[in-house]
Length: 164
Image 1 (cartoon, rainbow, N blue to C red):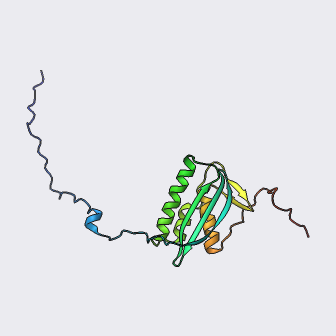
Image 2 (cartoon, rainbow, N blue to C red; image 1 turned 45 degrees about the horizontal axis):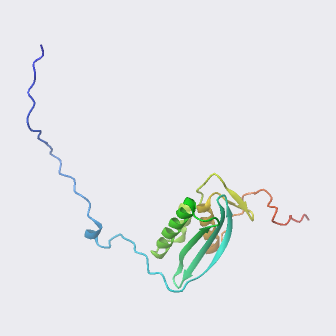
Image 3 (tube, rainbow, N blue to C red; image 1 turned 180 degrees about the vertical axis):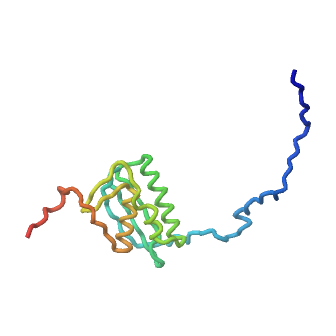
């Protein structure tokens, strides 16, 4: 018969390594490394663009103040639903980022190319998703870059090309 070993009553942790330190809290850090959006001005100037996406008609408003692009609003043509709520949240975050000094380049970099199941073509442009449409419209508006390099199917709402 196997002999029963006595287990110790206490388990003692033995370690030669120093205890890991907990990172400082935001309150302890102060504002070090924390971006804070500037206040939204009372008056802004902007425009709204109507864009056809796979989720429906997207109305994208971009506003500027004396410091440049300061906010983006987005409204999906059909009322309510999860896509509308997600777009509202994302455009609020974009606005906060822009007013915190994040460049439009950064916003474009992170949103451009995001795909959803229903990509669309409009006026020679391909939009892979609502977020891709936001990025490409932002890029076109702020930098004048208009990527029409993708050959889209003919849009019946556009005039036929004239052959020479």
